[in-house]
Every structure is written in structure tokens, then in C-alpha cells.
Amino acid sequence: MRSSPFPTEATRARTAAPTGASTGGVAADLITLDDISIWYGEEQAGPVLSNVSLSAKGGEFICLVGPSGCGKSTLLKAIAGFTPIGRGSIRVLGVEVTGPGSDRGMVFQEFALFPWLTVEENVLFGDKASKGSAQERRERATHYLDLVGLTAYRGYRPAQLSGGMRQRVALARAWANQPTVLLMDEPFGALDARTRQELQETLLRIFTEERTLCFFVTHDTSEAVYLADRVIVMHARGASRHEVDVSLPRPRDRHADAVRLHVKDVDRLAWDAK
Amino acid sequence: MSTPTLSLTRPSERSRRLLLRALPAASVVAVITLWQLGGTVLANPQVLPGPLAAATAAWQLMQNGSLFADIAASLTRVIEGWLLALAIAIPLGGAMGRSEALRRVFGTLIELVRPIPPIAMVPIAILWFGIGWASQLFIVCYGAFFPMVIGIYDAFRNVDQLYEQAARSLGVHGVALFRRVVVMAALPTVISSMRIGLGLAFVSLVAAELIAASTGLGALIANSRVTFQTDQMLVGMITIGVVGFVLGWIMRRIEEYFLKWR
Image (tube, rainbow over the protein chains, first blue to last red):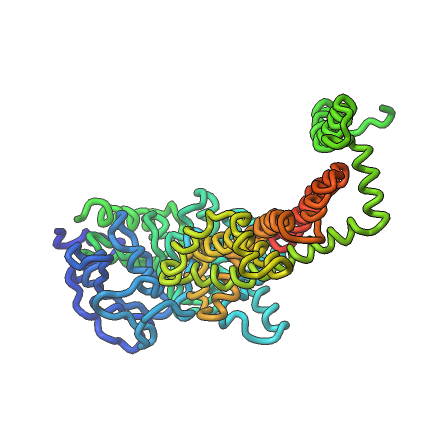
């Protein structure tokens, strides 16, 4: 196991404790993961995620990267409440997570739009998004569709839209419900390179405006560095984790040296380190 | 060809399409022609009356109103039995689709009874319910029930988990989740099961009427056989085909209306 990552001038990389000690409940933390482990099936088979501790504050953009099977998606699903936690606890604003809830919005790789509803009806689907008078709802839909550039398509059905447009609707739907934390599981993984870059820019535009805490799972390290304030590199079912802080101003230039240096760092941690 | 028009399909392509669209009508006309030829060659109206003889018989049955009475009687039975089957199949199939325990309780039972065809149930239906309305209702309901309960159960079991996860993450749970997501996602398969069920209700009804009824299209066939009125028998058969065709067409339009988002 790596004793330390490669600290460079561009990054302040640090190694997270391999066997997670509790980070403690700092008042400003929106979410705290306290030494969680997760098993699928038999306990003897070993955990799919072991001893992960993590905390995040409002307005942070956190990317989880790592090789397949490192547990990054499992971690996200645990926060979402889809996967039961074997040991430890996850708290959002001090409330323990026991299942899915609208405080944790979710954006899926497969978009998961409701095909029987229009774009506008999808955006207003959530419990908070659907509140208010017809006027308020319409204004809310307009606001979030504006953010993703799809106001003209409010009456369309998902089947009439391209993949990139569908994921824009999914972003608007998640944000319109005002989650405390937004979870995104490789949301742009199914899109072509050009659409992916457009969506990344849209995502950052909404993030800059709304400042919602974001967790974003990806296996694309340059995507992670382009988006995140903090990149968490996971290995071996979360038993080993490294963090790379990306404190570069946005919008970032994908080709700037500083960005490329960060990507190099994250790549080294993700693919070389064990 | 005086006006030059810009067309993306070549003339040969267009005429090929036209020809394809004319084929269903052409095949029906061809069969009627063959039927007329066969009738003429055989020259035995008790075995095979020609289309003209059948049309004359149909006209007579329409004149005295009995054909419409038979259609109405058959349709009423079909709709009644189908609705009854639906009233059982929707809650049972839906519950089985959502509950592993119910699936295990009813799954094997359904698969064991399902292979018994409606016609095989006619004798016992007569023993239990007598000759008449109740027996016919039972047979129609029985014929429509199994394909519908299995289709509806499949529809509810195969609702994409992703839709449910997305809804829960948007704060929609319980009854609202069921109504706004599960039912909507299951609807396409539920409606096509209903269409298949209606078709089978109609088929079972005729079986029931052949044996035990005084009115209805099946009864028309059965009674015409006894009185050697083969022309009327053919009218009964053809009417069943036409009514079934129209029912299927209506159900497909309803399906399209409800599922226009696909």
C-alpha cells in the first residue's frame, strides 16, 4: 500500500486514514459518513465497502473516482439510501439515512426520466418541486429548464429528445426538488465526448448558481478534475482512499497546465497506487 | 405528369407501397372468389353455399333483426365475462407482481389450471351453474382470466427499479409512488393483456354458446347445423370473424391513445 501520494506544487494531496476514524460532527458539515461498511449477501464474503469515513460541507463539489469495483458507486447508492449499510452510519444534517429521501437528489447514468410525462411534468415531479400554485409551478419549471437550456422543449416527451437533452431534463428535475445533497452516478457515461463536455459546462453553471453539495461518481479523471473541488480516489473497496484538492477557479481551461497536472496526479493515484 | 413535383420516393417505390397496402383487401377478395368457384363446382348448397347465398342469408337475418340480436347477446356476454375477469385479474395480478409471497401462493396454482381449455370447463360449468347466463359468464370469465392475470402480473413485476429509485429520491413514496410510477410503468403491458384477454373471451364465448345457448353467434351456428341451414351457419362464422376483428381494432386504438408517449 502507498504510504503517501505525490504532493506536487499544484495539489495538496493527502492520504485519508486507511481504516477510517470518525471525522467527527463538525457543525458546518451537511453530510457525515461515519465508518461505514457494506456487505452484499454473506458476511464471510467480505464487505464491498469497508470502513469509509467522509464528511462534506455545503457548496462543495466532490468527485469519486477509482477503478471498477473500488466501491465508488456502492458508496453513492448507500448515501442515496438504495443500499442498506452494514455497519456505521450516514447522517444528512444530523438525520440518519435509513432509505431514499428527497434530501438526497439522484441523477442516474440511464437518465431514469418518466417517459409517460412531459419534460415539464418530469421537472415538477418531486415532492418539493410540485408544491405551490399553477403559477409558481410554471415559474419553477421555467427557471430550471432555463438553467439547462430546454425551456422550448417543456411540452416534449423524453422519447422525442436526444440522450444529452434527456440528461439535462434529469439535472433540472433533481435540482428543482431542492435537495440538500445531489448524487450523480456516472451521469454522462452514456454520452458521446462532445455532449459530455457540454453537459459538464451546464452542470457547473447550475452548481455555480445553486451551490448545492454535489457527489459525482466517474471513472474519467479529467472530468473529475474539471468539475470538482475535491477528488476522492478510491481503491480496494474504499479501504484505501486519497484526496486531491483542486482549488482552481472556475471556469477551468481543460488544456491549462494546472488542470493537466491535477489530472496527472489523480491518474497516478487512481491507476498506479494500490 | 404535367406538374413537376419533388418527391423523395421514386415512382416505382411508391407504386410498390400502394400495392402492399392493397394486398389485405386483395387477399380477402381472392378468397371470396375461390369460395364462389368452389361453391359452383361442388353445386351442393348444404355443404358449401356460395358467397351470394351467404349474403342473402345474412340479409334475411338482418331484415328480421335476429343477427343483430345475436351479436348483441354475444357482445354482452363477452363484455360481462371480460369485465368480471378483469376485476379479479387486476388486483390479483398487481398484488402478485408486487409481492413475492403472493407470487408463490398463486403462481403454481395458476400454471396448473391454465392449460385446461375453456371448452373443457363447459360440462362442469353446466353442472354447477345450469344452462344459461351464469354458465356462459363463467366460461367467458375463465377464458379471459388466465392470460390477463399472467400478463398483468408480469407488467407489475417488471416495472423498472430505476423509476422507483428515481421517484423515492424525489420524495415520492407509498401510495403516491404506486399510483404515479408503478401503475404508469405497468400500463402498456396491462392494456395489451386486456386486449389479448378480450380476444380470448370472445373465443371462449363461442365455445360456450355452441353447447348451451339459445341466442348469440355460437347458438346461431349450432342451431343452423341442426336445421341444415349451412348458409346461416356461414353467416354466424363470418360475423364472429368480423366482430372479433372490429373488437381488436378498437382495442388497438384505445391502446394507442393511452400509450402515445411511447
